[in-house]
Amino acid sequence: MDHLLFLAQERAESVQLSLRSASSHLADSLQSARDGVREAYNNSLDAIKQQRFSRELADRIRELLIKLKEAIIAIRPSELYDRCLIFLLTEVTRTHIYFGGVCFIVGGFVGLAVGLRLRSCIVAPQRMRAVVANSYRGIEAIGIVEDVVAPRITEPNQVLVQVKAAGIDYLDIKIAEGYGRVLRKQLNKYNPNSEGEFPVVLGRDCSGIIVAVGKAVSRVEQGDEVWLAVPFYHPGTLSEYIVVSEDLVAPKPSKLTYEGAAALPYSIMMAWDALVSQGGLGPETSSGKRVLVHAGVTGVGVVAIQLVRAWGGNVTTTVSSRAAPLAHMLGADDVITYDNSNFDKELMLREKYDVILNTVGQVLHDSCLKYCVPGGVVVTTSASQLVSDSYGYVMGGLYSLYMRARYWFTKSPLITGGRWATFEVNGMVLDAVLPLVDSGRLQAVVDKAYSAQDAEVAFAHVAKGEQIGKTVVRFSINSPLRNLGMAFWQDH
Image (cartoon, rainbow, N blue to C red; front, side):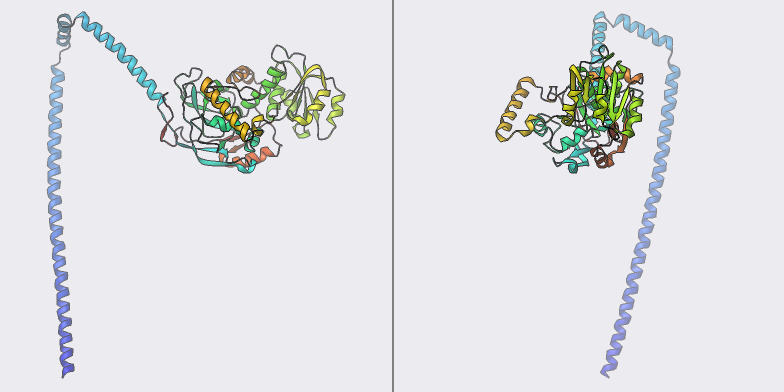
């Protein structure tokens, strides 16, 4: 009996639960229907209001246009002219005219100044891509990084250049091994665009477009295509942007591509210093002179051969057999191949030379003296060891004090000039050779051109010492102002 009562009670609770669930579901359905009706009603009201508002707005605009049309029709040019004439004759005095003229002139000058100011306040990239050395471990320390702090103009005589292509010089590998590290470390203290000793941006020359100029710049303008070279202690050119003094840049020859223009500047500087400054050669003094160029298909060698030939000199060069055809094409009168002959014996059979350009280094210096006429000149273009690189703690401290004193008294450690190298880098030299480039007597020799992401491969190629001419790295930038965030002009 109890079991039957339990079953009946359980069945009643089940029926009760089902009824409660059904009622709850019905209530939810009614609530949803009510909400849907209310939402539809509100939407209908909103649509009616919007339609009414749109109709009212259209009516107002129509009325305004009718009134404007009536006002234009009512204007009589002759009556307007008479009223203006009466106003000028009766109300305007000479004082008003003078005052208005002065305000116009002053306003024009203010507008011009504001325009120039706005041009100098373009926003520059905050970070950029660059090929750097993160230590002095040689070629192993060279790599491409994406977040180098972009430079900015800090002096009135500086320009900001967007780099299109940059050349690699063997000196860059020596810099990655520590060449000039002491001098560079001291100079970086006074360079607002350097945050410390590392990273060291590599590259000695480049071509590109000027995207901004300082207030005192007069030789170039924004938008000009330029080529340039920088000394070893200066931040390098293998980066998307570089800030340099206007004295270092020159207009890019129109006949050269960006890659060709990037392969020449630093080599031109070295060849000019060796031949002109030290060798005494030049357009007026080279005719009939005998010049020997060792390793004539290096970056500086190809320039030296072409300069001497353009100036009327006689050129002999030593090259590998595979580079001999190029040496002849560059204008060499006599080509000696050192891989299938004894070039010492070959040189003994020839007349001695007035100037010998040794691009190899100290190893050939003594032999060069044998083939030089009495009073002749032997010039070495390879970078010699800097005394400052061997300074210890005591001498390094004294050197630091000297640099600080020179900065405060002359204001010329890096930003505004100063000579700290064996030869001077100057854009005037590039201007001097421009006619030779335009006439085709000085041509660029690009061995290989790499993209920026393959810069490590490019340096490995240069380190082998097998390049003919110059190896170049291209920088592809979609916009001159790719990453925004830092104003590069700073008032002083």
